[in-house]
Image 1 (tube, one colour):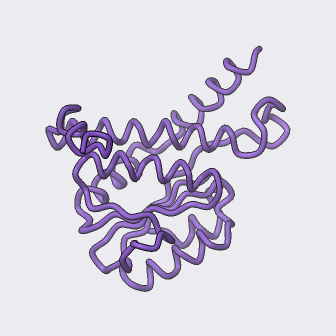
Image 2 (cartoon, rainbow, N blue to C red):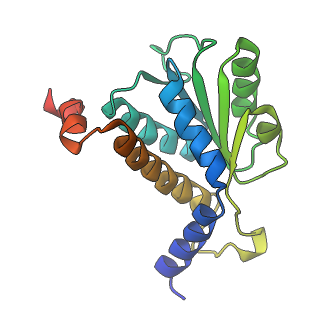
Length: 178
């Protein structure tokens, strides 16, 4: 099997493993939160930033934790954290702080029993291939990160449908059109 087929198959499996109730909780948390905060480290953080851009284009008040202009997380906010292992110290620490403040914490992870999953109000867990099953052509967290990106793009479509947001609406909020 070639690289394309392998990665697509692994990502499809990860996405199909997501509990629909947890997916619904994520959507509700995004729509009900006063503000949405996202955070991840490294490549997971880049995926979070991509999702943040789409949420802004949906018209939501969104911030990426750690940026200079990011306000403090508040009690009525939603904090979405991304970590394959669920052990990334900065992500786990952000979960602890956000929970202490009273924010609703949602994590996306590949480890159901991780510290991040245990610290979060809602855990969206991808069933990831075991280390021995991860192909050499999908190194490190490739399958997790690709799955998270696809998952978030599906969430954007779901939010568009629920809110009646059109692509034209999003285009009008796109920075390039200013």
